[in-house]
Length: 144
Ligand code: 5GP
Image (cartoon, rainbow, N blue to C red; front, side, top):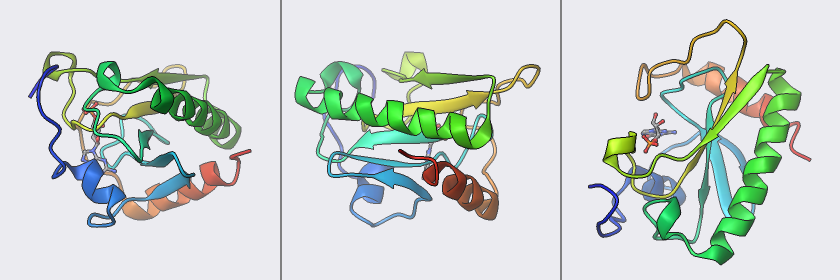
């Protein structure tokens, strides 16, 4: 699977959207769902995905989905800043295997960064669930 291909509704994010797989949720509205990345590259790493989409990546997505998605990304990023006080935040999408993409339902990463703290490995170790829930609650409380 890379830049070109067919959307597979068996992907893990489609399962999360259908309630078939668990997720530590941060925020949702009628357009998007935001949840904690279970293999975080930094404390507070979360994802925002469109709910009504079969786009595998950012390039494929319909303009009318991009608008509400990116507005939600900004909302969650602002909440993350308010909750965790990072020195910076990475907001990224990986498009195609060559870029590092591993899940083929469009998603935007929000990754808080602190000076002097190296970025964790993409697809590294699994987070502690209780810690993820606490972080999600902290971020959710700051969504304005
Ligand atoms: P990609 O590599 O496609 O840009 O990002 C996929 C992200 O999804 C990775 O950061 C990975 O840690 C995360 N991820 C993979 N499987 C799961 C899962 O089952 N639950 C959650 N919450 N995140 C996942």
